[in-house]
Length: 121
Image: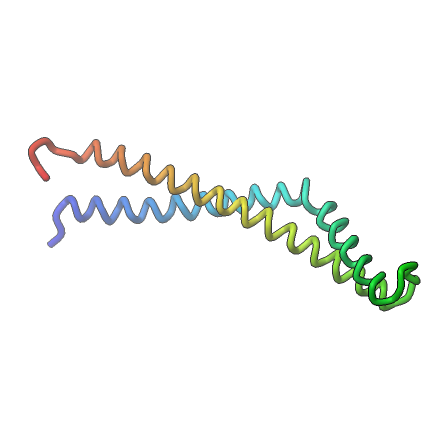
Protein backbone atom coordinates (compact mmCIF):
# COMPACT_ATOMS: atom_id res chain seq x y z
CA UNK A 1 0.00 0.00 0.00
CA UNK A 2 1.29 3.44 -0.89
CA UNK A 3 1.49 6.16 1.70
CA UNK A 4 0.56 9.76 0.94
CA UNK A 5 4.19 10.81 0.37
CA UNK A 6 4.70 8.20 -2.39
CA UNK A 7 1.44 9.20 -4.08
CA UNK A 8 2.45 12.87 -3.93
CA UNK A 9 5.89 12.02 -5.34
CA UNK A 10 4.32 10.12 -8.26
CA UNK A 11 1.99 13.03 -9.01
CA UNK A 12 4.84 15.53 -8.86
CA UNK A 13 6.96 13.44 -11.23
CA UNK A 14 4.06 13.13 -13.68
CA UNK A 15 3.46 16.90 -13.55
CA UNK A 16 7.16 17.59 -14.05
CA UNK A 17 7.24 15.43 -17.12
CA UNK A 18 4.19 17.11 -18.64
CA UNK A 19 5.36 20.64 -17.85
CA UNK A 20 8.80 19.92 -19.29
CA UNK A 21 7.31 18.36 -22.43
CA UNK A 22 4.91 21.26 -22.92
CA UNK A 23 7.73 23.75 -22.59
CA UNK A 24 9.83 21.83 -25.13
CA UNK A 25 6.97 21.97 -27.63
CA UNK A 26 6.38 25.66 -26.95
CA UNK A 27 10.09 26.36 -27.44
CA UNK A 28 10.15 24.37 -30.69
CA UNK A 29 7.13 26.31 -31.94
CA UNK A 30 8.75 29.62 -31.06
CA UNK A 31 11.94 28.48 -32.80
CA UNK A 32 9.93 27.57 -35.89
CA UNK A 33 8.29 30.99 -35.96
CA UNK A 34 11.68 32.68 -35.52
CA UNK A 35 13.07 30.53 -38.32
CA UNK A 36 10.25 31.56 -40.64
CA UNK A 37 10.79 35.24 -39.82
CA UNK A 38 14.57 35.48 -39.51
CA UNK A 39 16.25 32.29 -40.76
CA UNK A 40 14.67 31.25 -44.04
CA UNK A 41 16.15 33.90 -46.31
CA UNK A 42 19.62 34.05 -44.70
CA UNK A 43 19.83 30.24 -44.75
CA UNK A 44 19.02 30.26 -48.44
CA UNK A 45 21.59 32.99 -49.11
CA UNK A 46 24.33 31.25 -47.12
CA UNK A 47 23.65 27.89 -48.78
CA UNK A 48 23.58 29.53 -52.19
CA UNK A 49 26.88 31.26 -51.52
CA UNK A 50 28.51 27.97 -50.50
CA UNK A 51 27.00 26.21 -53.52
CA UNK A 52 28.20 28.95 -55.84
CA UNK A 53 31.70 28.68 -54.41
CA UNK A 54 31.77 24.90 -54.85
CA UNK A 55 30.33 25.15 -58.37
CA UNK A 56 32.98 27.75 -59.19
CA UNK A 57 35.73 25.43 -57.96
CA UNK A 58 34.34 22.47 -59.90
CA UNK A 59 33.33 24.14 -63.18
CA UNK A 60 35.42 27.28 -63.41
CA UNK A 61 34.97 30.72 -61.93
CA UNK A 62 32.47 32.30 -64.28
CA UNK A 63 29.84 29.64 -63.57
CA UNK A 64 27.83 28.86 -66.69
CA UNK A 65 24.06 28.53 -66.46
CA UNK A 66 24.11 24.77 -67.03
CA UNK A 67 21.89 22.19 -65.42
CA UNK A 68 24.66 20.75 -63.22
CA UNK A 69 25.58 24.13 -61.74
CA UNK A 70 21.94 24.99 -61.09
CA UNK A 71 21.28 21.63 -59.44
CA UNK A 72 24.36 21.99 -57.24
CA UNK A 73 23.30 25.49 -56.27
CA UNK A 74 19.73 24.36 -55.49
CA UNK A 75 20.95 21.46 -53.36
CA UNK A 76 23.19 23.73 -51.30
CA UNK A 77 20.44 26.33 -50.92
CA UNK A 78 18.13 23.63 -49.53
CA UNK A 79 20.89 22.40 -47.23
CA UNK A 80 21.40 25.97 -45.96
CA UNK A 81 17.68 26.28 -45.24
CA UNK A 82 17.67 22.89 -43.51
CA UNK A 83 20.64 23.72 -41.29
CA UNK A 84 19.18 27.11 -40.40
CA UNK A 85 15.85 25.49 -39.49
CA UNK A 86 17.53 22.85 -37.37
CA UNK A 87 19.48 25.49 -35.49
CA UNK A 88 16.45 27.68 -34.80
CA UNK A 89 14.11 24.84 -33.78
CA UNK A 90 16.83 23.07 -31.79
CA UNK A 91 17.78 26.23 -29.93
CA UNK A 92 14.12 26.98 -29.21
CA UNK A 93 13.61 23.45 -27.87
CA UNK A 94 16.66 23.72 -25.61
CA UNK A 95 15.48 27.07 -24.24
CA UNK A 96 12.02 25.59 -23.63
CA UNK A 97 13.55 22.58 -21.88
CA UNK A 98 15.63 24.84 -19.61
CA UNK A 99 12.56 26.94 -18.76
CA UNK A 100 10.63 23.72 -18.09
CA UNK A 101 13.33 22.56 -15.69
CA UNK A 102 13.17 25.91 -13.90
CA UNK A 103 9.37 25.66 -13.65
CA UNK A 104 9.72 22.12 -12.28
CA UNK A 105 12.08 23.31 -9.57
CA UNK A 106 9.74 26.14 -8.56
CA UNK A 107 6.79 23.77 -8.47
CA UNK A 108 8.71 21.18 -6.45
CA UNK A 109 9.68 23.79 -3.88
CA UNK A 110 6.06 24.95 -3.60
CA UNK A 111 4.71 21.41 -3.23
CA UNK A 112 7.47 20.60 -0.73
CA UNK A 113 6.46 23.62 1.35
CA UNK A 114 2.80 22.54 1.33
CA UNK A 115 3.43 18.91 2.24
CA UNK A 116 6.19 19.51 4.79
CA UNK A 117 5.16 18.65 8.32
CA UNK A 118 7.31 19.86 11.19
CA UNK A 119 9.08 17.05 13.01
CA UNK A 120 8.53 14.52 10.17
CA UNK A 121 11.50 13.56 8.01
